[in-house]
Image (cartoon, rainbow, N blue to C red):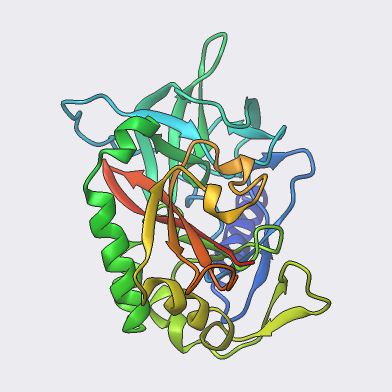
Length: 302
């Protein structure tokens, strides 16, 4: 009885810790990775763990076009733990490599968005579970670029930005991953999830990193630092390019951990030749249940 009491106490403490992972300011968040990946500051994002459960819920009904699944958010050369059950409470029984495609999922899931776990077939036999935070529905680039719904997604994103409509922004975000934003390609990444409806009203200070060629970091609230840069593009006569970041002039515009995610470049041209006042946002698009949602936003400027 004493042993069961100890286990119950541990579970209660874990539940309390999970409740405290919804802060009003950025915190460092870990994940189900092996090795020493770079941690991503997060805002209002639950940990990638489901409530321990031994009774997984059935997966979604089959669709006419079989879905393919791939890994995302796993740092280059990193690996993702496979657990014996749908929680970090369970032992590690294997691993998957970064950027892996065609993950052999069984169709069984546990938990609810965003704390969702997928059952997977292990190489060599047996089953295991991986956190849904690291899973995306893989869409071939040529198929993605022909998906007319992405234009509607960008249009809705523009409306959300111009009107500072956090609820609209939340409705078009990835239900599994939220939106991860980098103000600068090599700056820190911030993931926004449950905080999205209030994002444009946020006043707490964030260190967004340095702009190219700058000496000091940009520090301040979202509304002061990020919103004007979003409006400068989405409130203008922008151009859209599919899986093409050539306008940014960057040699490495799309992070390797997003290799299985398609993106659109939303580009505001120079006001005149040589003005160097262009600006661009790369919009990563994640699919959940075959529906596209905003997954990432990465900002570029001269």
